Amino acid sequence: MPSKLSILYVGPLLEGSTTLQRLDALKDAGHQLTSVNTEPGRRAIVNYPLWSRIRRRVTGPRDESNANHIILKMMRAQAFHVLWIDKGLTIYARTLISARQLQPECKVVGFSPDDMMNPANQSRHFLQGLPLYNYYITTKSYNVVELEGMGCPKVFFVDNSYDPHTHRPMMVSSAVRKRLGGPVGFIGQWEPERSHSIFELGRAGIPVRVWGYTWERMKEIPPILQLENTPLWGDEYAQAMCVFDINLCFLRKCNRDLQTTRTMEIPACGSFMLAERTPEHLRLFAEGVEAEFFSSNQELVEKCRYYLSHPEQRQQIAARGLERCLRDGYSYRARLSQVLQEIFKS
Image (cartoon, rainbow, N blue to C red):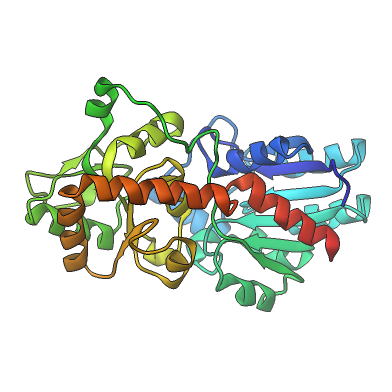
C-alpha cells in the first residue's frame, strides 16, 4: 500500500457527524483527501414531513448536491487510489460504472455505520450499486454475510470508533456542568425501548437528563426526569458526557445493534459507561473493570443506584475504559488504517 493515498471522499460532511470524523482521521493518517459533500449546509433531519417521507420511501433520497456529476468531474481531472463513499444512498449505479471505467485501478470502497438490511437505511441507488463496490465496510458484524449475499464482492467488519479531536477528557467549568450535566445522562434519539428504560429509572427516583431528538414522544414523564429534546454536537456532546456521573449507552433495536458509536465515545471521554450487555460489548470492555452493563431495566436501576453511591469505584472504571481505548486502538485513525491495509493487501 502506498504510504500516502489519494482519496476521493464522498459523504454527508455535516458538522459533528461521524462521516466528517472519518474524513479527518484519514487526513491525520497522512493521506491526501478530496471531498464531495452529499448534504452541504444541512444537518441530519429526523422529523421529515409526511410528504417527504412518502417520496423518500418510493424514490429514495435525492442527489440534491449534484454529487454524482461532481464525482465523475473530479475523476476525469485527477487520479485517485480510492473512491470512498460514506453512506452512499444518493450515488447512482451508473456513476460507479463510469468511475470504474475512468480509473480501473481505483478501489471503490463503501462504508456505513448503519444496518444496511433495514429498509430505512437503504435506497434503490444503494441496492443497485452494491455489486459495483470493490469493498464495503460495515460496523454491523451480521451485515457481512448479508451484504455479500446481495452481491457485494468483499465486505469487511470493523468495530465502532471514536474521534480523539472530539471525544476526549475535558476540563469543564461548573457553569457548563450545570448547563449540560447531571447524575445520569443519555444523549440520543427517542426510541420506545429507551423511553421505557428511562421511565423506569425515573419511577425509581433516579434523576436522568436526556439530550436528543423527538423526546416529545415520551408520554409519561416522572418529575425527576429532565428531557431537553435538543441534540448536542461536537464539543458540547463531549462535554455533556464528561459531566454526567453515569452515561447510559442504549442500542438501536431497529438497527439490531450489538455496539454503537457511544460504545467508544463515552469511555474515550474518560467517562463512566453503563451499556446494554451484548457479546460485542463484553469483548470490547471488561465488565465491572472498564465499563458496566445491564440486561434488564431492573439491573439498570440497581447499577445506577450502586454506582451513584460509589463514586471512587465509578471513576476507576472510567479511567480503565479510557486506557482500553488508547491501548487497543479504538480511534478512527487506527481502525481505518487497518481497513486500508487489508484492502490493499487483497
